[in-house]
Image (cartoon, rainbow, N blue to C red; front, side, top):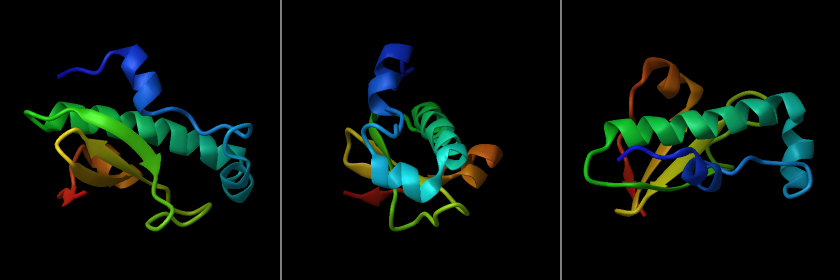
Length: 101
């Protein structure tokens, strides 16, 4: 199912200084821009590559990311699967194996 722009704005809501000041301060604006871009790309990647399931939410994985070095986002689906996606996955258009949530 293709995500429309309105749903995408809710599913992969951008990180802002106003709503996430600690995250913004930790990463800096340049990295936050990369994370926000990655969030959208990851949602679209899962949407394109996973049949029979819909993207529900995208967020920054604080456990798997390394501040100012390696952002990793998670994409949760309505079928209770979670995909951890880095910029490398998006660049290669490869989907990692999901974990059950």
